[in-house]
Amino acid sequence: GILKKDRFEPVEAFAMALRLEQYARSITFACEDDRVKKYLKGETIDLKEGEETGKGWILVGVDGYPLGWAKSDGKRLKNKYHPGWRLV
Image 1 (tube, rainbow, N blue to C red):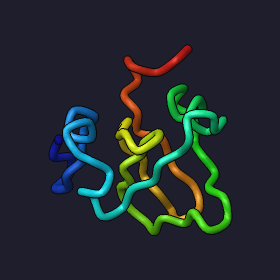
Image 2 (image 1 turned 90 degrees about the vertical axis):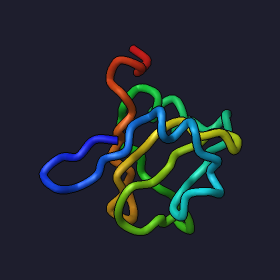
Image 3 (image 1 turned 90 degrees about the horizontal axis):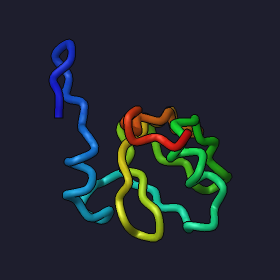
Image 4 (image 1 turned 60 degrees about the horizontal axis):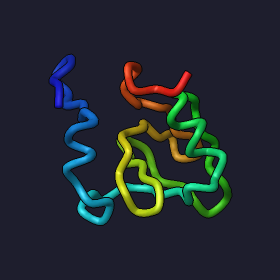
């Protein structure tokens, strides 16, 4: 990860080295879910009722495999997917 202003920000390589169950706050989407494509494009994701994650860093995955990170406010995931890896 990277230290920015006295805080740790995880990077994608760290996400891919983990299993979703190894990180306390994670969410996984089915590959058919439209939100997977939104995540891969770098867009913000609105969570559905019952998917609230709490605030902070969330490990995002698809079908149980990690993709990367998002910052959650509890109801929305602000995408932190690496800009060079995003779909255009």
